[in-house]
Length: 142
Image 1 (cartoon, one colour):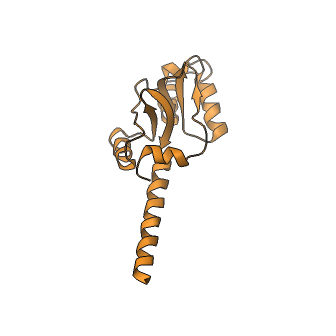
Image 2 (cartoon, one colour):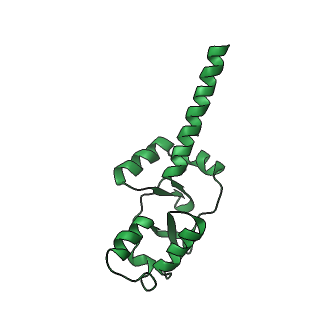
Image 3 (cartoon, helix red, strand yellow):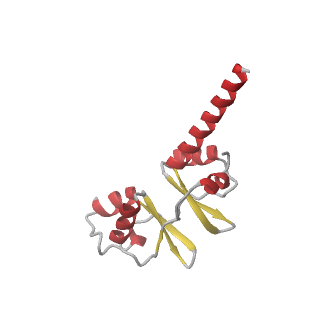
């Protein structure tokens, strides 16, 4: 897999979104129930931001705020780094490294179509390497 589109084609699971009026506690519960590290904040299909476990720790816990009364809009990143489906896995890994993030919303013509995590990208790279090793092994043996 070389592009985000190819990665999304093989990825299972839904894009988990929450509305801007939701509390941080609602978002954290959703992340815990689904065993994920982020939720996208959307309204009317439009991406407003992303809330991650890191945002929760820094913008709620360390700030001494209450999870049940803090709206996600006050803890999220309102300008998440996004990628297009045609970007490469390597480009995504570079963006994640540069911005020190682990989740990238995927937008196609401004429409949210998915999200990729560092885990998704690493799995893709491992699969690519395993395929290369298999091809080289078959070549050597033939």
